[in-house]
Length: 134
Image (tube, rainbow, N blue to C red):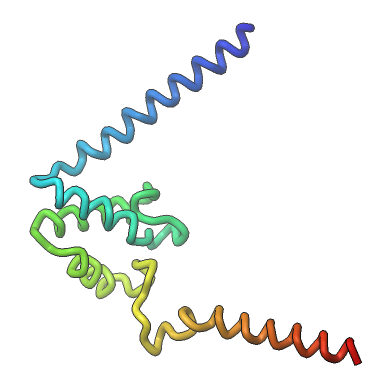
């Protein structure tokens, strides 16, 4: 009985601590308007952390992502649009920083490679089945 009570109290204390931490994030970035705040958090979800590679800026706590969060905050506060912020960060970090890079010759493999591999695999399966049925 006491073991389950201890586990319950631990879960409660961790959840309360987690809520206070998420509130601290909002206090770090005070905004003039709700639109700027919405734009900022939208960009944090759209931009990739250069260090983590599989996480966006919102989900990363690495030093580089914290620097980028501050940079995005300054750009949004100065009145930049989402496209202007993304353009600035792409110029600085390359297309890797955004999840949906533009379709251009350097990114053809990224955009069309999976489709090409799928077609090759489908052709191989078709040829194998045809050869086995003979």
